[in-house]
Image (tube, rainbow, N blue to C red; front, side):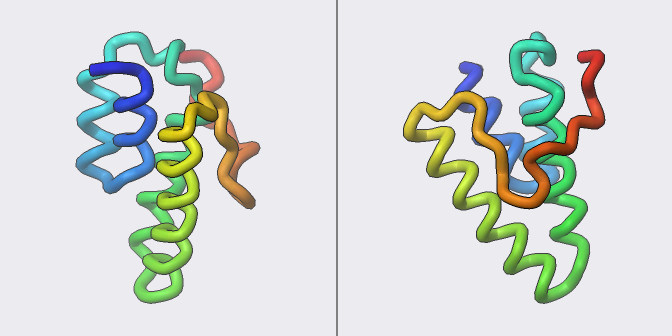
Length: 87
């Protein structure tokens, strides 16, 4: 799995986040902030209606920007969070 694929999977669903976290061995290469963004997005998905829409918009923005080559994309609102600093 490439680094770009792992970063895209982190921003999909919980299953995508889990697959990327387990399959991509070098977590330090992904960056703690990117892993945190993915985790926050699927936590927001647990909120009915408003959370789904907000999470969908942020996920699409992240996937498009990562696909274009922005390796260090920060989602609006949640982009500064970093729960995995030591990975």
